[in-house]
Image (cartoon, rainbow, N blue to C red; front, top):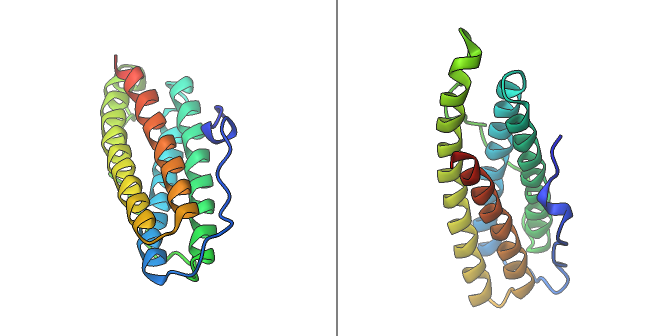
Length: 166
């Protein structure tokens, strides 16, 4: 598996987080989205393992980052007084067809997959920035710091994938 970004920079402490059910509900929606993201990256890693192992390794590494985000968001929800139980159906964006002539189809499928991933990561980045601002307005500075740290990871995911499209 590829290196995951979260080992490069520590995540902030949640000490000082106080009960706030409204923020817990807002964060819970994003935690559910992380579960879908984990599923997508693992699926993509499996589909490109044979034809593009380097890309597959990068998807594995990003999935590990997203798993860590999922865990940290669960801890934040718990500290905010919420229940980090996720009730969601995992939804994919559709399959990657590499059945016939895998080697010639893989680059096209990879470019399309990267484009979709970049768009999803941008949306996640924007949502984390929104949540961080909301947390700041609510006086939840540890939560805001964590949410901005996760946004930083999402931006890194965007940059890593955009680099492959050049």
